[in-house]
Length: 203
Image 1 (cartoon, rainbow, N blue to C red):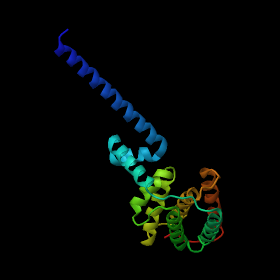
Image 2 (cartoon, rainbow, N blue to C red; image 1 turned 90 degrees about the horizontal axis):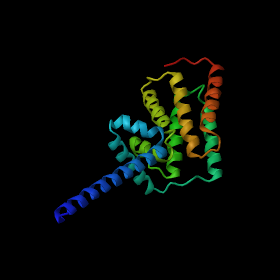
Image 3 (cartoon, rainbow, N blue to C red; image 1 turned 180 degrees about the vertical axis):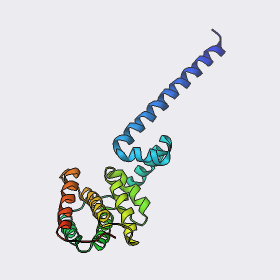
Image 4 (tube, one colour; image 1 turned 30 degrees about the horizontal axis):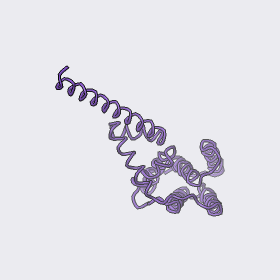
């Protein structure tokens, strides 16, 4: 066998090994990001219309959040924030727009205390998606409704749903031990009961 042929065969083997390593690395990356981001992974793929671009974006988010000083809040502080939330929630029946605005401010304050920058909404949502992927879409949906509320373009039912959405992220940030699905359902029921106690026209 000639030297040229041996070199060519070695080159082909190296190419196949390189491709195998590349495919393995891509698969590992995909599996990691799917596990880490859950529904946010699929959301990124849909939004960016490319799996490769979505994975690059999610990896970039991971890298950014890794550099932030994200910390759990002390129990006493969590208890204070929960008491604040109950006060806001109790005002929803009489002042739904104000209650939603206050809920947004409280969520923003908790995010700041945890270490998330909140100067830009899109960036905040991207940062939140790294550690709270299952509720970041709640945050987006609630904020869209809150924006419409400022223009008096949201119904009372939409405001109620936005408050429930904010509660999902709020509870996740405070690292409550109760399952999120149970908390959302209970909050939803509580707000509905409060709403039925008085007559309040939609916008």
